[in-house]
Length: 139
Image 1 (cartoon, one colour):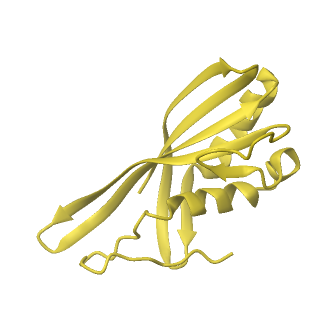
Image 2 (cartoon, one colour):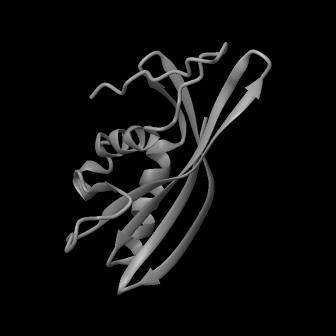
């Protein structure tokens, strides 16, 4: 999969726009060798299909903002929440660790580089499922 190089037309610094950042997150996760055998392609935007079985991941853009200078946008900044859902607590924590390892760091998207950092995490239990939520900053 090739991620479109969607750059800001009004910027001197040519910052990669983040409207499709969820696609980048999904691409990284479903192509990660540690996650593939555990969740396959069960990585969904916003909501999982009804009756999804086994462990799965949901992602959602939480924030998208632009930082401006006189020359235009110099940085696009966003946050994406990645939610891991499992019927087993140990599996949920293991998946959270693997998601964190897959996403954190520098990634190249076409000719642009993005930096992904973990900024927060929480966990909960709902509807007999263990939930791990990881919040990532993407610049």
